[in-house]
Image (cartoon, rainbow, N blue to C red; front, side):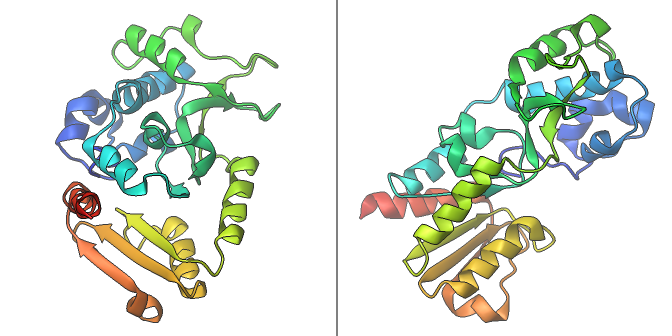
Length: 249
């Protein structure tokens, strides 16, 4: 939320970016566009080019990401995320240490899955955003699979990359029974895709400390409460305070 993206909200940001989609399709949140049955690829890519270009194509590293990088420093780390905007990678975190459990918006993949390779999306997205007009893009600019010629899709809601999953499993094995800090940022209790494995790791690792930061909703189960800290508020505020405390040491 601190990065400015809320998939579930009918807020001012959604109104400013997608007012025409509210009127034409009845969308009430960004997520509606992900599950909408688009009649034409020209319509589909009109929506996604506008979305991805706004949140990823024009992204500059935020103060939240800068503070997080300072906190991590040169320590070993791994990031689990359900965000697809690619902000971690674009902020300088190593791609092989970012486990995107629901894919991302900054890569493309063949819609027929004729092969496993992914391709950079942002150059194409920027071009589509340039030519998008009234929610449509010209068919001549639509991305096609270089192997089979089928339409391309964003690498979103796809199975996670196997090599990154293996790196995550190796990380967990390497730091088993060692001191580890689990920093959970902006995750509500409903997001069990992220929260469940982190809470399970906290419960299973005798030297783990669990810190969860979220605005208005901090959930810590009883079985890990003795090794956990919950901070209610904005990520920007709390991460900056943590950074300042670490720098002052």
